[in-house]
Amino acid sequence: MKADLILKSNAVFTGCENKPFRGGVAIKGNKIIAVEQDDGIDKFCDERTKVYEYQDNLIMAGLVDGHDHLWSGAISDSDHELDLNASRSEEEAIEMIKKYAVEHPDEQRIRGFGWFPANWNDAPLPTKMSLDKAVPDRPAYMNCADGHTIWMNSRALEESGYSPDMELVAGSVGVDENGELNGLVFEPDAMAYAWKNYYDFPEEQMKEIMRNFMKGLASQGVTSLSEMSADEYTDSTKHRYQIFKEMAEKGEITSRVHVYTAFMRRTDFSEAVKWTKEFQLPNFRVVGVKGFLDGVTSTYTGLLLEPYADRPDTIGEGVPLVSKESLTASVIAANAAGLPVRIHCIAEGSVRMALDAFEESIKVNGRHGLVNTIEHIETIHPDDIPRFKELGVVASMQGEHLPLEMNEKIIRLGKERCRYEWAFRSLVDAGARLALGTDYPVVRYNQFPGIYATIARKNYDGSMAGVDNGESLTLPEALKANTIGSAYVYGREKELGTLEAGKLADVIVTDRNLFEIPVDEIKDTKILLTVMDGNVVYERD
Image 1 (cartoon, one colour):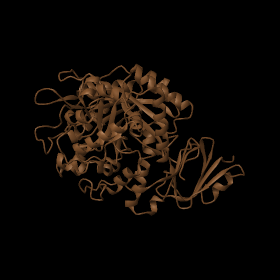
Image 2 (cartoon, one colour; image 1 turned 120 degrees about the vertical axis):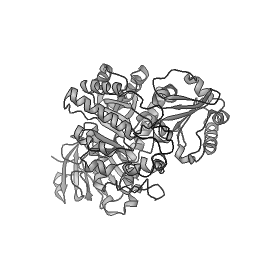
Image 3 (tube, one colour; image 1 turned 135 degrees about the vertical axis):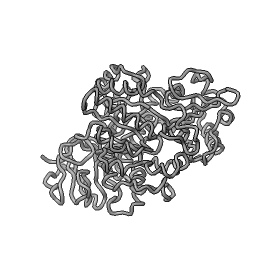
Image 4 (cartoon, helix red, strand yellow; image 1 turned 60 degrees about the vertical axis):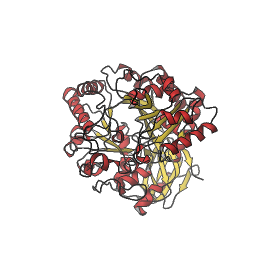
């Protein structure tokens, strides 16, 4: 059998070993047909084979991002949303918003994403007053970088139907000293009213946004990702998925999408099961369910086991978002329906609750073989680390969240408790499976800064990120967690995540051999070539 495409290099990292070797990868159709050392790959070549020679550039499996938010991320990657990540104060953000609104007179709503309390030197949270002055004529929605707070002007609050005394399943609506709406809404269940408008676009505009997003993903070597927004089973959600399914059937979805729908406060998952059957394409599929158990430590909504160091009156405001009994019942029911469960748990209190629920599911359902995961795990109690292996639960984490926090955990928890912040090393040493990703759009979908952070544990300025707790990964461990580790979460480890004969041909080439450069240069890695499903979907000029 002769190959359609051969990639050759002095550095081929299959993900099955810990070091690269000189050799090549042969591709026919959408499959890898051979991976050979030295010149062994040449026997798969004939006059019709296209051969790429990459000398010392690294060839590896396509990046499998373990945790993303597809549609919100696609919007963030478009011209329809303002990037506020560079803002260093409310005042600076307001100036950026005013300028964007003037430059985009045709936008029905002004959308922004990326403001973050830690970037504002822990200043007081913003209010609708400044946003009303900046955008008086249209609804304005500004998502916080962590996705757990939204800042709105009066028009957006009115359009979304918020009131000071509205009844919410979970989360909260911010009010001022007079009991009036202050423009802030906290946590996904409460934010859903705003998101309905934020994510609303005409169909052709949706397709344009997604096509551009796919090009961006390909340029960063991301060949698989997820939709982790826990979308509700509504007509609008289904319509959006049908649009994406149609695009996938036409070959316009060039990064494999794995969708996790709503989970919390349910024991009937018949609709979720229907959707897993209706949306089951190689590059767009509903695969499980996902829920939020706590919030984030930046706004004290992460659930701790002991009080916050700088707020000794609380272990977490408004959390957990469901009771232990409700969580356990939902996990048992979802697993019984054949659905893997993924649970957002920022802090050690929620991590323990989720592990307890997964343990109860095993008692009821037996060793079901489903891949349940806990998402984020920014802090963990050491007693819970070995439970991941015992229960077969995957630790799904994001390396770049460590520098993103700008040492905030030291303030929120104190140095001693930060011994187990982002405890990558302890989890791996205890036998846990690790899946890494970005949580895009919380950080960009370029996975190399996150890979660097898990190895070097440094902030963006080169200083130590958090405390020096020894929780670093090696380069092979980090690369595997960003490929085969995440493929395992998606239930596709037999198809994706390593370079092996018979697997789908998702392959990338980097502009350097990561094994031969100083660690600090890993974060600057660029992609030269991305092959997805046997097709070249990106090639750098």
